[in-house]
Length: 507
Image (cartoon, rainbow, N blue to C red):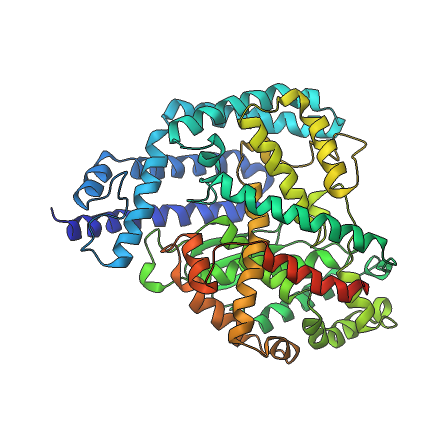
């Protein structure tokens, strides 16, 4: 079998995995939206069965033979040089995924599933009681298992590299550390300057905002942004998410809080950003793993761009605020557009990550990143984690949690063993700002178009520069192709400094 035939066979096998993933996705979406309470147990069995079928196909020994026939190996995962560039890109992803799937023995995967299942339950109890000691032994076991995962997956410089790679392929701990250290050094003084400025009144964002009117407004925004209801839908769930059931079936959810305006509209815009990415993959990639995101960081860049750069921008509300005020005259009738704009961009250092504003959010992530690195390098023991959390929170955010529920126990991620996931949230902000600089260079009247409600040129730019490429490039390749440089904190810091100097009247 020659290399071309091997690639064709690998793509044919990918089609089955692609379909199984989408079958799992529809069951998962239904579980979060419409599944009757008593259907949970059988749904778990259904999903486990599909995962088993998927894993069998991912780890089939025949895949190794096909990869070898295509010339893909440790030293050259892209295969023989004579193959077309997109086939070589496909091989790079397929080779990496095969290594990840086969280097972890089944017994280790099963043990992790069992340990994290118990850990999640223990975390719920520990968080309720604000008692880290109840969760500590579970996290200690998880850290040891993750160190075994890192050893089996392999790394050169730092065990965290192997864990990070599961969410941000090809990223290196040392590179991310350098970017985050620079970001932290520049964000902390900016936060202090903002905190010294006169406070902003955002009290009018809390009060009665009827859910039916919130939904109507959110749907209006979605339509204007370019969300195609023939290819997707909006539903309600406890935690907003986006799921892809096919290239022409991408679904988003949001949640409504009748007593607080921000949750639904910004959550909806955020998820729309994820959906636009999934809807924009090259149709020629359908049925293969090239019809996927490059990394969670790049995926998050799309949601953060629409939610924050666009959705919390002045131009956006110069277009939408009149309609919003008409929708909620009792709450916003006496609130000016400028007052509203400043209120939705309020900066307040807080204890809770998911409640953090655009400026302080990355500091929450850097805190977690630092602690995860320290744990897997054994520079920090699990028993000392609560105090390390408090100290880093004091240094970066200027606030210290009084309870462990508001500190080290606030996130579910560690109970799931998801070390390496948190950094992708901050990377999304950084990529979004860097891409926006390039976008504004190509579309100089960016703000004017948003103010006029003309979002099509912006979405078209994202389609051609980012979405269309699917998983055919690495994050760094994409960033350099679009912006001419690798990832830097400069663009994000400049964006925040310019925006919040205006919002807070800083001098």
